[in-house]
Length: 203
Image (cartoon, rainbow, N blue to C red):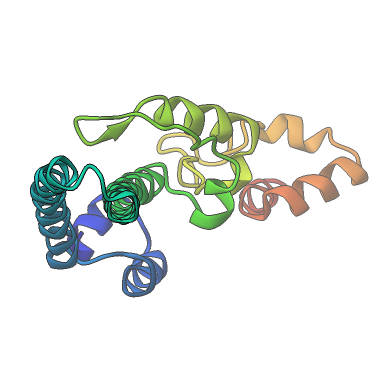
């Protein structure tokens, strides 16, 4: 994914640089991915050929117990190798989908958010992971601090210079009636809104 594509998703320059840096550390280039796919195909072809040869040897050497044992060991080793290749390709696909989805949801820390996801026995379909979007949507609702804020920009609403509601939904009149502690909390929670309201009042 290019910097322009990341910027189109709404990421800040600092986040884009971090994602690009992480790509170099955690992502597998497409050519390596294709290479692994090709190795897997070759492994499967080799497995098929070897299985045929093994069965032929077993038939012609049925009375040789030691040879039959060695052949069975070879067959088991080849099956294990094929399973390892398949698992590796599956993991690469899952990792790529998860990372792309985390960027779409604007996760601040991909590793931290991923640790909260249930990725056991995931099912892939058309380049997506079943239920992943639902998990992230619920997590974004329960733990919004893990994701970039989507709040509207602060500032004075056109046509309502200080008289209407600020970015927090508090009107100038409501602010004027606030006590010291309430104003202090507002200043801590939303300094931009506090500045907007104080500049519009008699502070």
